[in-house]
Structure formats: C-alpha cells, structure tokens
Length: 402
View 1: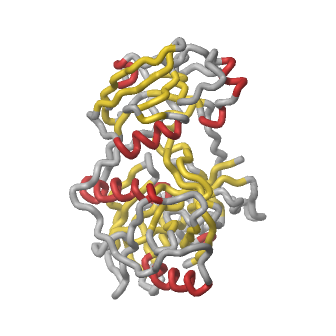
View 2: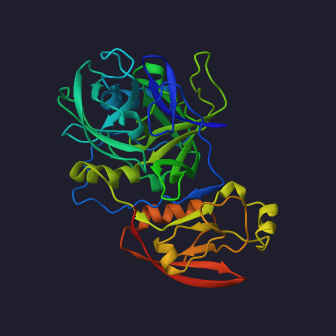
View 3: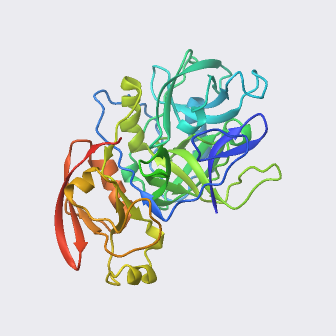
C-alpha cells in the first residue's frame, strides 16, 4: 500500500507523495518498523482565531439532499484553490503552475490554512476564490510536523466569511462528514462519508535526528472521497464546522495517468491542532514542539509473535521503546530502549510505556495523542514503564524539538 499526499500536479496531472518536495514523479512512502515520536505542543495561542457561525442544526441519521445543499452553499465560498509556481530555473514554463491544492479562510484578515506540502517549493502562490476573484498570497508560516501552512491573501471577495472551527475531540467514529476541495483540479467539489477512525499516524514532513521522519499522530481517518488536489481543504461536520484538514490517502489504486485514486482511506489533520498551530504561525512563522526522544514499535506490529520475541507478557499493552535518542530528554531521564537507533531488527530489553501522567497508554498512538494535546517544551511528565516485569515511574522533562 502507498500513502499519497493530496496535492495535484497541475502541469502534468501527477499526484505527489508525503515527501518534503513536490516532485513531478511520485515516489513511494513506506513506514519503517519503528515509528519516531511526534509530540507537538497544543498550547493555546494568546489570540485565539475568530470564530464564524453557521446555523445548521444537529442531525439524527443521514443528512438530506437539502441539508447537504445548504451546507455547501454556506461553506464553499471560503474554500479556495491554490496554484503554486516554482523556481524560474526549473525545466517548465514559468507561467505554468507546478502544482495545485486546496485551502480555506480562517479569519477576516485573509489568512488561509492549507498543507505545508502544497506550498513548500513555492516561488509564487496564487489563490482562486469561488467568487471568481484571483489573488496573490504570501506564505506566513509552515509547520512540517503537522503538515500545516498559513497563507495571507492580498485581496478578499466581498461578503466571504471564514469557516468556523469545530472541536476534533468531540468527533465520533461513524459521524457523517463532507470534504470540499479541488480534486484533480476540479474546483469546488464536495464529497461525503463518515469518520472511519481517530488517532491514526502517518510520517510527518520533518526529519528526525536519528534519520527517517517523525510521526504525525492523532489523525482522523475518513472514507469521504478525497483525491490529489484535495490537500489542504476542509473536512466538515454537518454543522459546517471544520473538524480536520485533508492531508493524504492510502491507496493501491491509480488512474491511467498515474494519479493516486481514492480507496476510501483518507487522513485529515485534526482541527484542534489547527487551533493551536495557526495563531502561532501567524505571530511567529513557526511552531515549536516538545521533544521526548524515543522511537517506538508501530501499533500494527504488536501481535503475539512479537510479544514473545520481546519477552513480554502476552497480555502486555503499551508503547514499546525500540531506541532512545542519545542526549534527548528520555535518555537523560533513564528510559531504556531495546537497542541503538541505527540498528534494525526486534530485540528484547526496551521499556514498555504503559502510562503517561497516570493516563493509560494502550498503543503508541495513545502516547502521541497525549503529547499532542497536553504537553509543551519545558513541561515535566511522568512515564510509567514495564521493565523486567515491574512497573517503574520515570520523570521526564520535555525539551524543544531539535
């Protein structure tokens, strides 16, 4: 299976992957056996984002056609198409975009949220509103860990309203959601589906000190049809609130042109990360994350065979520490990894993290979710680990990510 980003290569109709560049030929992304941590700060910004309101009532069951039409009418005007122009020395015409994605308006000052991978190689950025207005935009800041970016447009259409931000903590599996964006350059496309799962992980766009990529956690999985070009567009609940930013799809299907096609497994950055990251990007241009300094066995590898090989009880649950980054906070606190971070293979001897600040950790995703939502650099936490059959409490002071 392949993870594909949802930006659309406008010039040659090729999708791009979750790489840090926007190549015209899409490479394959695979997750390594050990998934490095992804612990972003969720410190509330000093100036919270202004919230618009949309008057759509609660729903019991599936929405009607009239409900969906009203939802589209009230939200689509704030969803934009983003055209990216690259380096003038690159082998393409300077007036032809190298890629295209989606975004949405979050305030009255013209700030647009999109994915970082949409704009990371941009020389110039053009934004198209559904009203027909075309305007240039400035890149305000990017966050490779959450794959978010904030733009500011030079002009805004009359009467356009920013989209209200929901609360992704309140999102439930099975809830009906819609995505609006520009799949394959088809502007203003609306699709629907449900929330398939929460707390998923993908590789982030930041390289870890030990090599490979950090892990982006707490993602929302949906079966709403999202495709290349949907990158950066909103995932909405039926009240018209943004609950996530569409980021990637997992697929084994491709079009005749080589584009990744929707297979019903899409991923969105939860809006509560947007709530915290976007104001800081607007104020400072970057966002600092707390750093624990471990790698962990991926959740889908914790089966009975693995537990036996690691000499763990067959009923053991938690985040198994495969390695500890030398000099990092976990190493300073005495957390034990199974081996060096440049080694491969499964080895016994690593700590099994079973709780953080007395909150149970059933999987590595649980650990990431807690770090994302409840910690920041400089904060002290307490890890409870299973070591040689006994529980050990380990205080750790988080640092800023290097």
